[in-house]
Image (cartoon, rainbow, N blue to C red; front, side):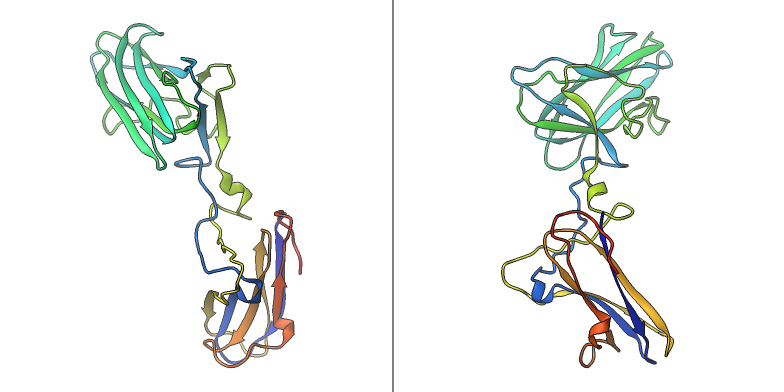
Length: 261
């Protein structure tokens, strides 16, 4: 669980500043989306663990197409190593088109154009035909005409392996993006990188037109191995901090999310 921190605030006839201070608790102001995304879109992707020598295993779909029609087959890859994108006529018939897909640290598109010829079905295949020791991630698989609909089922793997026939050697799995571990809700969060010496930096937001003599609550959810300070100041960062009842040291030491008022 993430920890919730809150405070009651009796407003003045001033704007309020809600501030997260890395202060004496020592993070720097390194702001980023707090996840390394394993997916290019959505929350899921297909992971292929390469091996040496290669296993020549695969994940595939049999797709209905229109004969004598131009199509494009495409995947997005990320990681270290290479995969083979193939299209075969009918149910695992002769190879119509193929393309080696080299992964890198960022998402890279890999595609091959083909004509269906006399085929009314083709097999869309992603194969581990190249040796390696690392993993390659695959997302947003597509087969269709230019500007047309995706004929693949579950091309983004959001429904697990539905629609896909995957080799059962343990090298092919569906994984979820790690941001679910780092956000309380949604896909994004704020990250503070913590040095050994405090930098007294932070982030702020000015809340204009606070009603005078009104109770408010300032609240954040935190997770990680050290704490930050949540405080409210009067005006546009003027004067001294308000009394201690509108400051909180926000801790979570075990990496879990928790709530605290």
